[in-house]
Length: 192
Image 1 (cartoon, rainbow, N blue to C red):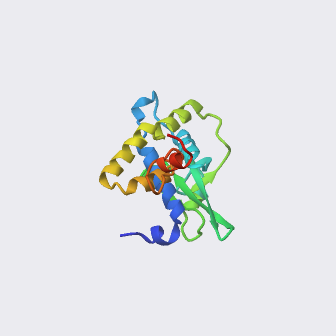
Image 2: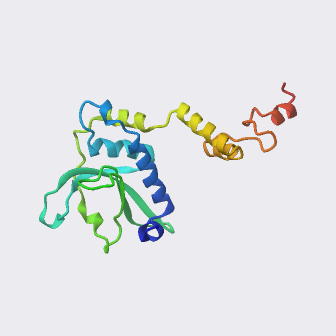
Image 3: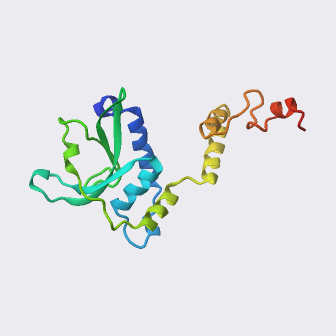
């Protein structure tokens, strides 16, 4: 079953960002670090990969009485028909709840999630080395991409051209070689 939020609240682009964030976070091997990974570094690393801005502040279940837990999250701008109408919150290290990576509607007054994320000053204790290590760990290597493509080609040979185009390799429609080095172009230009 698809929820109302999945079908009516979030855009396909927002849902894609959520799935990409989940995939990135799943790639993190926390045992490769000397100390526990904090939400502050994780949000920055995922934000770099997704092209999203982070915010620092506190997460509080009762913001009207103050307090809360130091936290960092990502902001997904919402733009409908050229008009900014708020934002969604992509929380990659949810406080005291599961699933760990969540997408929350921060633009609606009827759903109070946005008020629980209280923006404050930018943090000055960020471990930039950890952020860069996380980015490198979450990125897919060329070898992994080639292995995925090989599996896709074995499962459905017709999908190889589409997948190649999606990752930026245009294939010739006549001979399936990668352009511009395909046999058709080489023959046309007299290259042997």
